[in-house]
Image 1 (cartoon, one colour):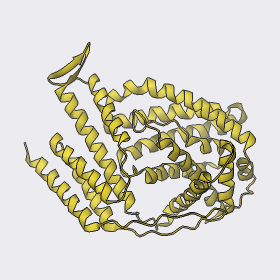
Image 2 (tube, one colour):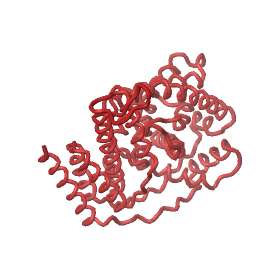
Image 3 (tube, one colour):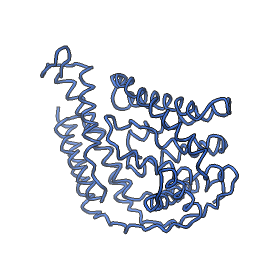
Image 4 (cartoon, one colour):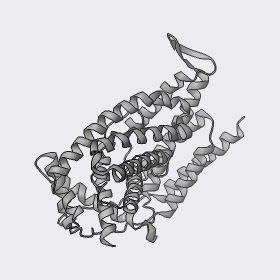
Length: 368
């Protein structure tokens, strides 16, 4: 690939490294972000052309989806909306005002654009208009974290060596060794059929059973099961149901109450999203084919990400020094990745469980 393509993929991989660290932090809402992945984006605002910058934003969103297993779920679209709105606003602001606006200012604008666009998309796809009650919390956290990130970006730009090398086009940027992993098309197709089944189920009891089965599928697909994110999602849905009372009052706290109708709707939404996330994890585990020329950036980005992760774990010193070491070693091609052995998915068992999921979905439509 061209030198420009490698630069874009390399910076995208740096955003994935930051995103991975942030993904480990429990959040009250599954799409809530502190914005760590915006650090590399802030640092290349003056370096990348608009076209390169736009590709970088797409790679950041797609790469995050691959790593977290959310690429084939609602959360991907929420993340994409936040990334594109914040990135394009920061790039446009920097291009228009240049040195008159600092990285802190760009970071604040980006955080506001990201939070507002994510809230709007989340309200359309998952939560409904009640999600806007979380706006003060999200905007408050966003402003505080964006100021901190902007200051860190300014400090790294002053003390780090990578940005100057990128700007002067002096990085070696050796191509990472990309090992093709076997694609399991049957698992991918079965997971897609499971997604279609999940979308048509509207009975709480059946959806609860399907959710359990989707976790079974995730385990069969050898994907790690994380408990805290779905629990936080479930809790957030139930809390938001307080603002949409509907049906018989189950119990109340002063002026607010849990009602049977709103709680049931909240549980259905939460379980459907949790099931979709599990299905997305399974598709990621199937190693989707990325052979098209237009998708060549993705395996390159993931290759750089693997090397960055390995190098960062083996570095020492202050945080900025460790980041610098990891970036420079990866760019020079002096990091050897230790790939984990690809785990074989028992396809017949996987497909069998998916068939049960589909049958349950059909039964749910026959129940009146």
